[in-house]
Length: 347
Image (tube, rainbow, N blue to C red):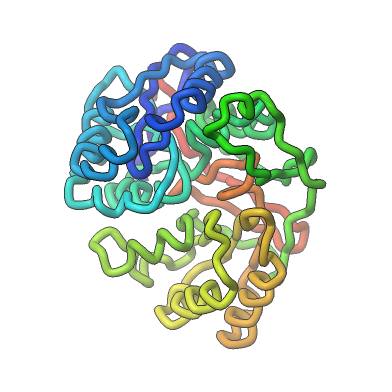
């Protein structure tokens, strides 16, 4: 994988709307996220050409969304691209994505949920990208960013060192809904649920592998497209998955995991990690399904599985770099990113 350069204080970054046009619909929320990026991290924030258009315009113009990405990549003054929010139709940008432009202009791209689509474009182009928070979510967190999130961004995007061991947020987690369209809510801190340890469901010893995955619903969108990663290319990967705010019924989750079994992907990976579900709903059912399919049905009793982790549709989160080596120590019950994901500026 080709690694982008680290961010430095004073760098210019671009925000982008590749799916839902929420930044144009909720300007005070976007302003809060922009302010945090500028004041907490010392960055210069600009919007791509169409990033702040109304959501209806964004929906009708997938080509313009893709062109915003290509232009931001080719603009040498821009050092990173931050997604504003997810959605459900980044898939419609794929016909207009130029992999050569991505390949020839490696720079940080960060987002989650529907941004899985764009991450797979970067992965196909051989460029490391970052499954992490977005402008309207973690950067615009009500009442200010969580220290766990701030520390994560500093170590994930501003350092060329390997991230090392990652632990759960000791302060807890939240997915409390405070309506974004009400400006007064922006100053109200969301209630944190008690911190909970990650669950190591099975496995022993130490395994390592490059990180690959995303939001499981969006991964379904990608299947059978030229951007999907076939089963043989999942060999020795640590697969990461998480579910969206739609709160997928356990039956649907079972069917998707069985598809990964039938395709041979589960036999090829070296480990599997899963983010905390939205509202932590169905966590026990999801755990049981993973063990049912992976251990009982497939006989993969030694495949390490960690669930309830702080990434995806929970808050705050840690960032996952695509194609970078991570390590699971099932005996010590630790998870680490052991390879650097970024290059120093002078490299």
